[in-house]
Amino acid sequence: MEVILLQDVKGIGKKGETATVNDGYANNFLIPKKLCVKKTAGSVATLNRQIEDKKRLDEENKKKALETSQFLKTLTLEFKAKAQKDGSMAGTISTKAIAEKLKSDYNIEIDKRKFIDKIVVNAFGVSNLKIELYKGVIGVIKVHVSEEK
Image (cartoon, rainbow, N blue to C red; front, side, top):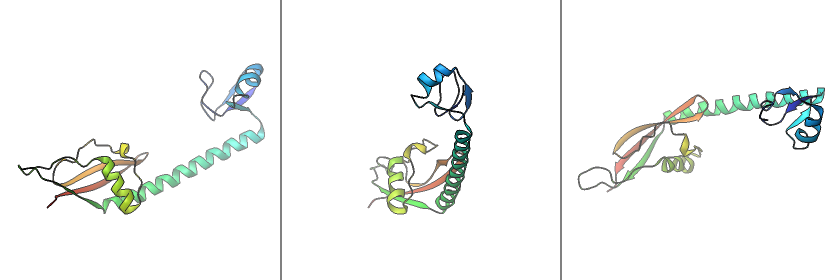
């Protein structure tokens, strides 16, 4: 029996692929567990429509990420930190704090785990941090830390 896989099945194939399996295996195991559907004209059309929808969604997300990347180039986030007696910065500015400031001030949601450089902002001045906004789209965020008076 030819089936279209709805999920990855070990030894059979990946999601979206068509595979030939025994009738009993398909009818008694794969189909009841919703791991596959029988290959028919309707199911092939549905699969093709889902693939097209996914491609369109990927293109839209990439376009949004490119727009966000261009906006981030013009942006400088301002932070204040206390200075130690020797003039160095006390503490650090975390990626979580940067992500929260982007969300609260500019309504840009960025996952704190997507920062590429694991650079810790622990000095006064301007630091450039790279972040992966989408597959292959890298944004640069300028973080300026000044001394709190």
